[in-house]
Amino acid sequence: MLQDSLLLSAAVDGICTSLAGAGSYEQRLHGAAQSLERASTDSGNVAIVAACACWRHTLDEVRALAPSGSIADLALALQSTDGLLARYTLTADERLRLLERAQVIRVLLQRP
Image (tube, rainbow, N blue to C red; front, side, top):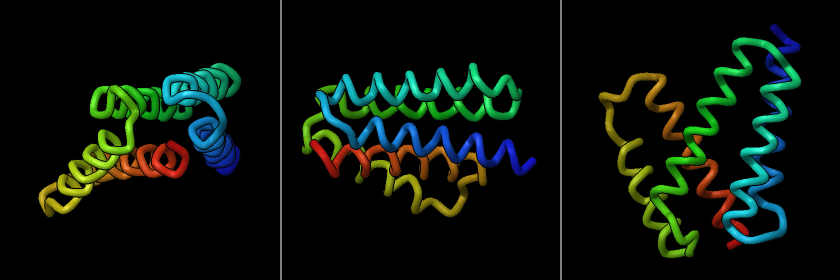
């Protein structure tokens, strides 16, 4: 259990490092996806593989919401995500997915 948590934490750290790194918007998203693929492959753990799949879906959502990667697109995507997070009817899983999306967008906005 602890080892799984550490592996997932390392995977999320790899995502954030890639997203905040050098390169274009697409290169940073691609680097984050590669980081997830490595974590998924290296762990072999079903829970980690599932969590990585969720994070990959989150990256795809961000790419769809802000296709150009411009500050304006990312800010609009964050505003939309924050608006959805304000709903009190969200399930815990829905809230977690939206928080992940907001985290990805915020990291991308730190280095446009």
